[in-house]
Length: 203
Image (cartoon, rainbow, N blue to C red; front, side):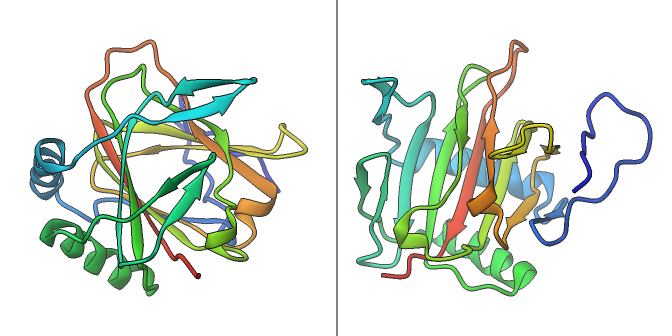
């Protein structure tokens, strides 16, 4: 699979591998995106959770919240998330995401990256509840952030894309089996970003 890096290069970027990812820019307008973001910042009961890393518990460098259908709990890094009920705004976004991706979702994980110091380390979304070859739709609101992808066993196979305000990235196929992804910390002064990852909990 060819290497892709679309940063710092004025040449036209190669397409993302269709079997792994699809990118939809401007699914939501800037006005819609910032309106949603302001609502979520002020109304979501954000939590900063702990997770095990290198033999000790550390605070996650971002805030999170879990919404979805009743009973669709999710366990990540040893922490169980019980879903909050859908809000009108989340259902509005969910409807547009499902129309764009032609996939139905029953939960969404919200991540609030408050500045460039907030991040998520290399990982795969391969938890048992997501089933085999999960389809995950990732909506970005606010500050554009670089999304890195690399092969688990061959790190020379890698991809990167800047996720713009109002965009949608669809992850699919065997991506969670053989690839991992991250949002790295940045030394730049960055504004806030909210990421919504729509998922299907099968149990």
